[in-house]
Amino acid sequence: CVAPRKLAFMSLLNGEKEPASKDLISDQMAFPESFYAKSNPDHFKIIPISAKGVIYTIADWLEK
Image 1 (cartoon, rainbow, N blue to C red):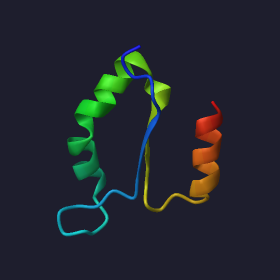
Image 2 (cartoon, rainbow, N blue to C red):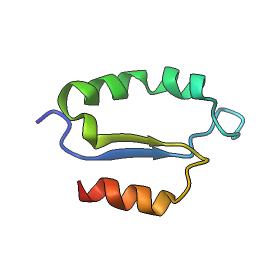
Image 3 (cartoon, one colour):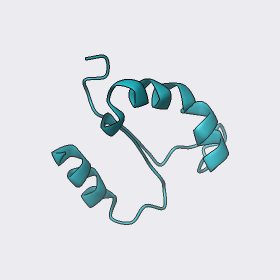
Image 4 (cartoon, rainbow, N blue to C red):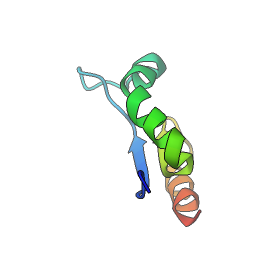
């Protein structure tokens, strides 16, 4: 299995330590996202800074 472990990114920041834009996240995460998409798409998650109930989102995701 190429991507055995679950990987989550939360509240990503830009170079100025401000919340990263969706465009920046898409650009910077394109490679790992495409890598996981080929082998284990359910093992890769990007959780936005504005996500409500982050703890529950992560707990539900880890149980899968």
